Length: 173
Ligand code: SF4
Image (cartoon, rainbow, N blue to C red):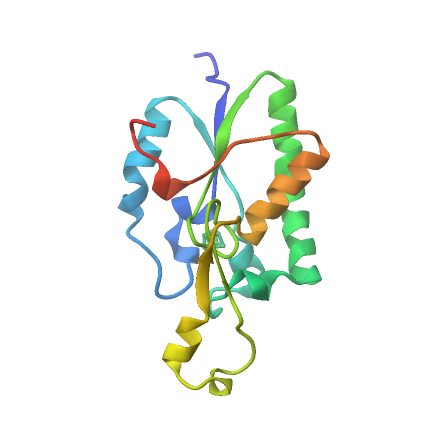
């Protein structure tokens, strides 16, 4: 059979919810329709690495984007994305279609249209209450740090891809 030459890239946890910070893991089947549609339409699915698990581990606290915007995190993200960007370049140079990159809405790393920001640092005891901590988190209309870096590194190679939050996908789109 001929290759479909059609590719999508997805955030790691769309295929593996085990990496998600506690307690936000969803049932894997929530992504079934999306994945089934892509597979039935013969797309190859490239799974991006999970930056938060690789850098911060499985037992990490939840983070906001502001906490991840430090040089060390940015550098590690860039390092793990470079092989993928090289792969994308190779696909494009060989006539493959990259339909887009699918991220996770609201994630500080993999959000596409929304991410979360907040003035968080230090021990929980620095704050008045749990409500005080929670009230400092805001959803904002920008990419998470990992998607931002992916877009930037692609731009350095003059590559422009479409980015979507998987939650916004529907069979009609
Ligand atoms: S960092 Fe990205 S891949 Fe990892 S759990 Fe969060 S949204 Fe999923």
